Length: 243
Image (cartoon, rainbow, N blue to C red; front, top):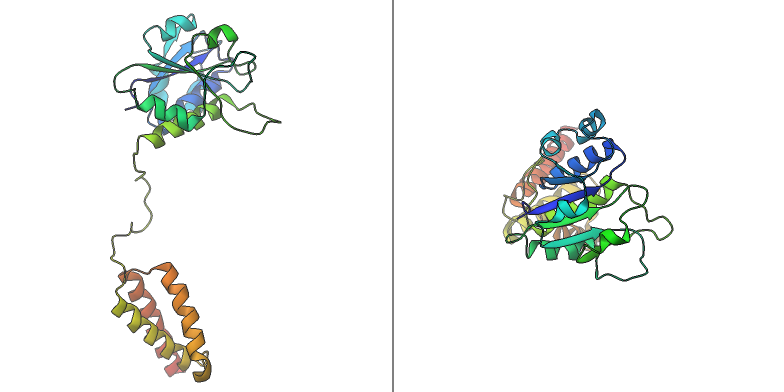
């Protein structure tokens, strides 16, 4: 769904920023990078900042002017932080992602980012169907180029509906939730253990157990977690007896 979306950088001054953009793109599964008259590219700084996204740099296409870079595109979105005297139809990153993905399977799309110090010029925005603005602090609205690309590409990736599945820690909820019977046996076990260790007094047990029930009900324990907790209770009971 993202293969037809082209990230276009216009007259980028710092090669490292191109590498940072490539990294941001690869993080979010975009691969099509076009460069309009970059000041210094290819460059070792770009490769270093890419941090493994060298393939995107290697496949980047270089153009001498913006019109050439977007000639084949049917939807063009320009990213700018500055307000303009002439108003363009505006999108935020989430709206832009939705619009792009509703059409990207059929047509090539361009998302354009301007110069680090001055952004896109008005005649370049004239080529765009929409102006994309990233909401941020009005008193300091200038985003680093790679950061701006990261925000926009993140929304594109999110809009595809792809589930994050890498670097999984622990189980992913495969265990069924504990049944009422399992929970009641746990509460009985918990109450008895708290009484055995002298924490719970018979005359206060009802109100205390009611509060503990509320805590565990909010958590919604699964069957494995119940087994772990009851194992802790058994250990506590055995340790108390040995003392």
